[in-house]
Image (cartoon, rainbow, N blue to C red; front, side, top):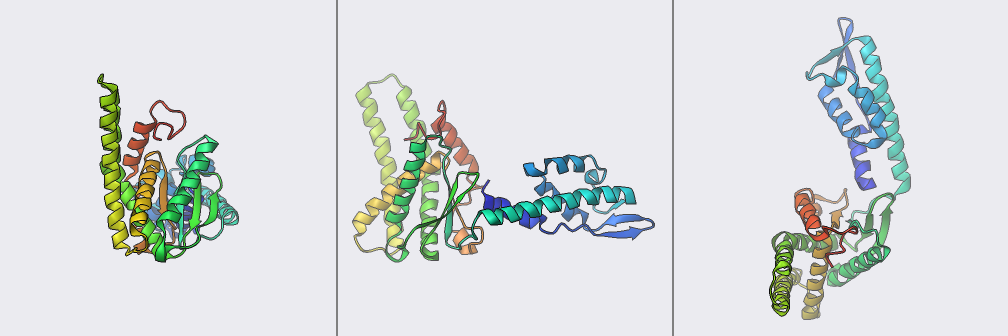
Length: 304
């Protein structure tokens, strides 16, 4: 999980855990318990709160299914101590993350590396992402692509693009690559696996496989043409479309082996909507990784 995502979850659910009570005939009603319960459930998914989760699970409060929860003073104190301990730990982790990573730029994009363990593959991936960004973002989208952050403890990098229009346009490219992965790329690879397994003439296999590859690239060409025309990029348009098509193909192949692309968490809604919803495509990505990496120890080694 990205540190920024972790930070966002902790702030939303744990920055101010509200444990307020009302005396009811010598006992205590925990006000708005369902909201507090949901916050605690989300927070105790993190490993650093495993001990507190176990303590919560041992209380009668945490197994109460009523919206109105009334407890005695001893039970309330036990529950309050656990909540206070969670609050302290959450605030400590939030502060640590804020120290570790810079404030996120509105025009930043987070990119997850595939699960490579080979340094050469990691180096090639970063080089290719740089090429994809610089070849795709031309004209009014052109600008310096800067590294903002390497998310410590995970395989994510953040880059800052030149402006909001560039982020939206890149989101459209990612959307096209995701759609190509869903509709064309996996069908191509599945058919390729089937053809390779057939006992037919080697030259015939080569012809069929080359045809499948060309068909996929033709679809990428068409999408590149439509994107370039929609973006009103006129200078060197034919050359640009060729470069953009190559970028789309490369990005699709990286998405197929586990790469992800996200907007900044604080990006405006219209920017976020220009990118595919990764949660909606998670099953697709998992299936593609399984297809392309079966029998491989290093993700992506069979998808090149």
